[in-house]
Length: 265
Length: 272
Ligand SMILES: Nc1ncnc2c1ncn2[C@@H]1O[C@H](COP(=O)(O)OP(=O)(O)OP(=O)(O)O)[C@@H](O)[C@H]1O
Ligand SMILES: [Mg+2]
Image 1 (cartoon, rainbow over the protein chains, first blue to last red):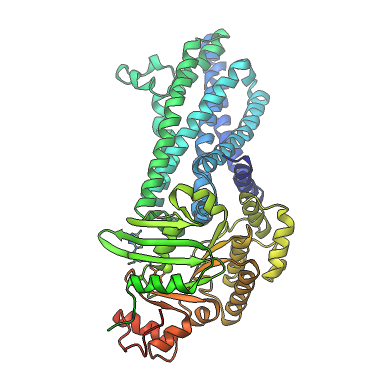
Image 2 (cartoon, rainbow over the protein chains, first blue to last red):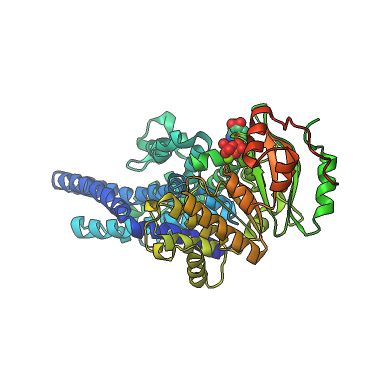
């Protein structure tokens, strides 16, 4: 694994952002729209209800910012890959001495940069506009951030594998992967508020203990360490499985001779 | 009797005529797609500093052969070697010493030309990339394009930018799939000349496909005709023309494409 190659690939995506600033707008615009909508809902409910419920509703803002971490990480991986498909560049990369793990690492890093931009903007605006300070999560923010980002990478690899397997027809599916799991990972509500039958499924995803933990920290200032361990453990499993799936699909594409059709279509 | 193409004869010819290092070799390369053989026990050797042309009608298996040799498509059976190493197990090392360009791939259209070249220079670990890029761009007469948006280049311009990418790592082995497709005669001529020049200077082994017989005659030291994945004949362009009693390579091509073999008797048995 070579840092030189990874940084070269990252550079390719960074050049892209300097060439097409619209992509930066997208990183900031939609999250801001969401934030304003939910922020206003929050203010409205806070004004019209007792204090306990009012602080409870603040969870929404925290959840939104953290959800974006997951979502942007997934997009960082999937969009970077699609970018090479769209520009017919995939073949150039595959005939260069680039290992699969180096390619994926570069997309992971792009995911990380995307999150940083989104989070900084969102954190700032929610603080100024709605006095919601994301840093009330203190150092818990670091493991939350890391776990959601890694889970986003796994989802990104799964999305990419879908595109490799089913071609560009699967593109829209790839965008939607995070939203398939959104209902069951307890982003905006507690696991115990979910229908009983669905609760066991919630704990199959590393995002669930993080969102549960976030609410706990905002309420009590601390959280159950076992939640963090669960998230980290599940993440290791997901990352391994998703990486394996990606490599498997890539090899299958090579075997079926579809890689080139795919890269030049 | 058709043209001499038995593997034994070919092997005899190749081993006696060329003593340079073999940098690329296929042994009995076969690739099937849904039961149809795109390549059928295709064997060949490419020597250092040699330009080998792959010829054949649409669908003959040229691109499939290149894709297998680049590790993009896995063979159904057969063995591939580059620089004496088995291909699959040494892919990264081999790709570091090789490069590829085709009319059908592109560098990211939304980046500037220099940005694209810099990215690939860094991927290949080119020392002093800026200088190298400037040198190559001058050689290919595209220095003025460096700040242009890659996607807005004309076919001829982008072909030369792709070639620039292909020369970045001073490859010892280069695969060019129809590099002159969609070029006007003038630019095609320039591209041929520059490929030949760089190839001679750096002693590069090139595997070259084209449907342009002019290309082949000017650039290739030796050619292989493929028909339905099988070798039908091989030799230097002038040998082949002489032996098939045709007027030129284009005639040979048409005969092979229509009948799958050269109908005329060879004038004489080729010297082994
Ligand atoms: N992924 C694939 N799936 C099914 N068939 C394929 C695939 N790739 C190639 N083929 C078939 O293999 C045969 C050889 O194709 P190939 O692209 O190698 O031809 P070619 O000699 O490069 O032709 P051209 O001159 O048109 O570029 C064709 O019949 C083609 O349809
Ligand atoms: Mg072809």
